[in-house]
Image 1 (tube, each protein chain N blue to C red):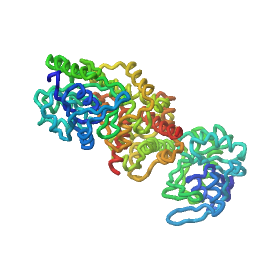
Image 2: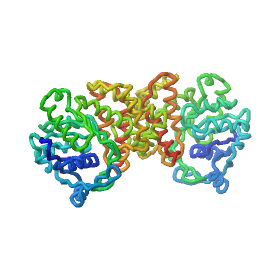
Image 3: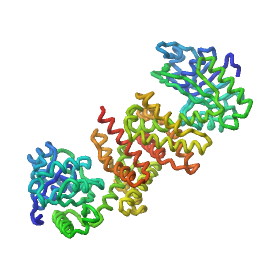
Image 4: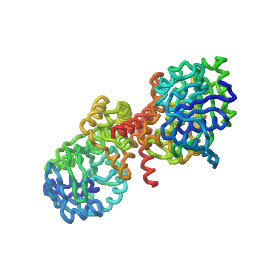
Amino acid sequence: MPASSSSIAVVGAGAVGSYYGALLARAGHAVTLIGRAAHVAAIRDKGLMLHKGGTVEAVRLDASTQIAAVRGADLVLCCVKSTDTDSVAREMAPHLNADALVLSLQNGVDNAAALAAVLPNTVLAAAVYVATAMPEPGSVQHFGRGDLVIGPLDAKAAHDPAVARQIERVVDLMAGADVPVKASADVRAELWNKLLVNCAYNAISALAQQPYGRMAAEREIVQLQRAVVHEVVAVAHAEGVALSLPESMAAMERIAGAMPAQFSSTAQDVARGKRSEIDHLNGTVVRLGAKHAIATPVNQALYALVKLVESARQAV
Amino acid sequence: MPASSSSIAVVGAGAVGSYYGALLARAGHAVTLIGRAAHVAAIRDKGLMLHKGGTVEAVRLDASTQIAAVRGADLVLCCVKSTDTDSVAREMAPHLNADALVLSLQNGVDNAAALAAVLPNTVLAAAVYVATAMPEPGSVQHFGRGDLVIGPLDAKAAHDPAVARQIERVVDLMAGADVPVKASADVRAELWNKLLVNCAYNAISALAQQPYGRMAAEREIVQLQRAVVHEVVAVAHAEGVALSLPESMAAMERIAGAMPAQFSSTAQDVARGKRSEIDHLNGTVVRLGAKHAIATPVNQALYALVKLVESARQAV
């Protein structure tokens, strides 16, 4: 993967994928966004409209609805929903360069492993801290942050010098595109910290269709969120990820103050009748808890309730 | 309280209170329903329209919006929502005959005790098994069952011969009005069994706005309901009510098959933006669990979620 000008494919060009694709294209790389027909058509027509810091800029880049457009890419950013990771990996496998690097920019703690289970390529994981949205096809709106923490799939890969070089290259590439980025040998801890916050906010916001500020105003809800965090930290420990309980608790509680008007992505999915990522949020905690014989009654309750809401929507 | 022709006041003439009031009035008793203005006006205009078994009958009885109308009653049926028990007890206290018997026909396990804490009168509790609704003011619709189990407030009262005589009288009175009724020294077990079913269905049906049949179709939801029952049985034991776990579990699971199209009263309250009885359902289990140092994480989760939904509605 040449760092000077790379060929980059973004698989799953939603808000996050389109945002990083735009920054990389602005830095001179050959970027192809692979996404839905309406988004692709709008981009081919006028370019990708990047709303950031009060300005709008039309970014010229390639776009396609075909997964085969990953062909020739040095770097593939995987930005699909966790529910689609496995199927997308199988679809892109026949088209992927043997030496292409695959970077997961997804929620959840199991996506990089799911990609690596299907693809022979090197897979890295990124914890993504960005607030973006797609106001309409062809447009991406940046609200805040945008930093990445990039690291290896697992502890074994962390000791592979070839993997270390690839991490260094992708960090340089992102930094060169004005993305705040750092490498971490322990990106799993970052992903678990994100998971923990998602487990404590997403389902509750979805079930009550309420923003984080209203949740924090209810003493009983904060008690419930603390119970969620206790369970997630216990499961993380069993998975070999040493999260600090006090730090995790404080990080969870800070979110509501930082984003009082925010509705979770799960709340937005439920409101639109779309399938959420709940299987990869509280669902992951329940599944891994069962594997380690750790009780996760509160995560199970939230998981079951969101599944019921989703199944009911699908039945209509 | 003469069994031949009694003076009976129904405090809180919703569907349940109006139904039993109608049956007692048909049996020749002097019944006064105390309820909302629209219901009272319709009853005064045309009588109470009782829809039962495919027929409609106009039942003549008295109606009032004033709590002072309990004056002179030998028997007071308390049918208000659990959230209103304490305030209604205080309001009726100055008007109540000293020898009036008060019978709670309410959900939850704490209403009779709440009445007795305010009133000097003898208070009995009834477990009510009836499906009724009010299609419009002045009308009550019977869908099924209608049986009562009546007993003393607590174990101490069960040994009071005067209380035993009053139970016998009210049982005779109800039986004479074609109400299937039995006395039980252990009405608390009946109330806890009802509470257990309510705890396992009401909040879930409310949060997902789904009927019981769809809940039973979701394996994860049934697992959640079983966790609820485990907690309620443990708290009941600590309260001195010996529920059988296998019987409780089986009773809970039967409900969905018996009433697949049913939405819980909590679901209906939430959908109408009304305050539900959740404080007296899962909320009671959480409160009593804390008193006995029994963990109730799943009841706490359901309780917190319904409180959040309610607080959000009130804030709009």
